[in-house]
Image (cartoon, rainbow over all chains, first blue to last red; front, side):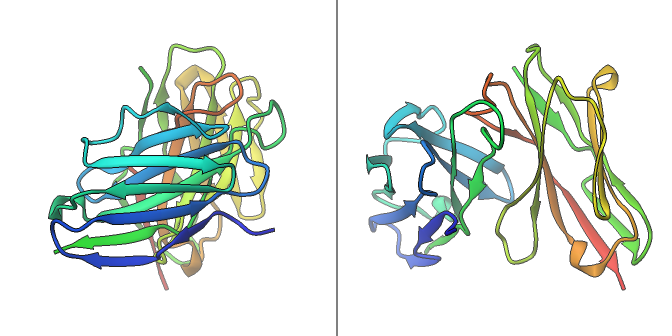
Length: 117
Length: 116
């Protein structure tokens, strides 16, 4: 089975440019999470969705960040305009929301390494 | 609020030695889930184990074993006969949802280096 798919894997952009990160969750998973990982702050949850609806976006650092999930198989995280301090690895994860079994286990994508110059 | 503490920032051991990674958690909920993830040098986050708060049985999977003790709020991870491929950053995480969903609170990770 395919895991969580993220694109691009690497992104280098200049300050002020718009950046769009993409994620395809595991089929059948109804939760989707966006994380950011930096050396200084570790792993931070930015936002998560349940059945395509944003549930908690309290981790989104500021209005420059936005996330959407137009359908069950696709989500985007957009940064506009980007700044050097946004440089990080961005992970997408998905999980299934049923009791028992592997419910609750988040499976992570390979991440997108973003560098803003 | 929940919290996960991994006091060991970095550990180095010689190959074939056993090593234990510590994880201490704080939560007020009676139902919660604990996880371990591995992040090898390639960068991906790999799920290792999930344990719910009602199951205190230790678990063994090959060279990996986990010791869950509610009395000390600890969920420690032991690698037996370590190998170079075990070199990675290991994260312990906690979830308070009844179904183990929603937010994961991560520890800061322990960087494990296995010296050949």
